[in-house]
Length: 93
Image (cartoon, rainbow, N blue to C red):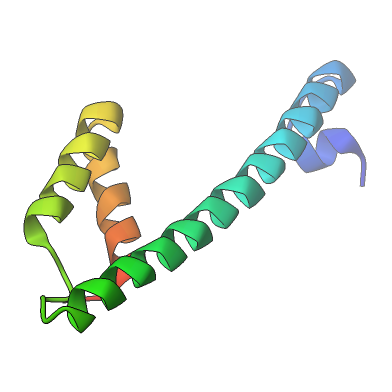
């Protein structure tokens, strides 16, 4: 199978651009996943401190701040992304 077949491009030049861009996206995705894993670990520290001190696992006003931040930066899809991040970091409530 050729690069043109794999990329769906109609020229070898376009296939080269697409292949390079996909490699960059794959590297970015790896970094994003690492950052999400780091965020999950930091969130666990916060939750443990809050619970140990007698507080609740989730701070809803803080979650609203996060939702607003992502929504303002990325629009409606940002809200969905933030909800997914919050779920990953604190679980379903």
